[in-house]
Length: 298
Image 1 (spheres, rainbow, N blue to C red):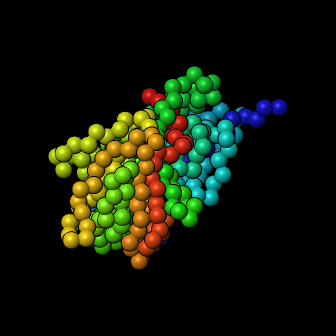
Image 2 (tube, rainbow, N blue to C red):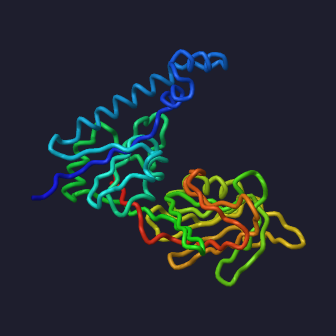
């Protein structure tokens, strides 16, 4: 007997829920915001709107299908099944945070707040959930294969990201490392290195590229390639500034060797808590990941 499809609904706490968690009651949260010239009503209204969207999504799942829900904070402990249909309801970042835990499962990104979210990854409206689920199950949908970036330490630890990986110091201190790209090598002191995919090229990498005025060709979201940027490299007698940006093809890699006794880290997609320590002498290789995100297209 064939199993019924399973839908995994991925969400994150709303701002209102986080306020209640921090202040215990609505009244205390309202007082806290009011004392700072802010109004809790707008925050609560967005929370209620999100909850309505969540209920709409859940009611759109056929009764005979299996279903479960997981919060962003619990993704690292959740076990996805190979045939799961993953529905991410929220912001674009939620899809990115989910991607590294998947192995080919189709993801449907639902934009809970189209007036606030760009919708780069949450491409669909919650009211279209039933139609989107039917398309995903039938295989009649168009899938975007979004390239991811992989960071691997020489001790075997591995990190995946959909947008970008940051390598540097966990605080505002300077990062010290040896950077190697092919035959090029340079010892650097900087504010860290960003290695971006085509999906991430609309965010952090785009800002760096734009501010420099010397444009690196950023890859497309489905292109098997990456771009890298060194932030605020400092030139001195022992450090250089000649290797601060470039592109990496599908077979290329960037190699960094840490010269930080403490505080060196790698993390992906802005999630600093999910990081790898990058201490003195450790090596990190960054390249296009073998796996990609399967995103249901618009």
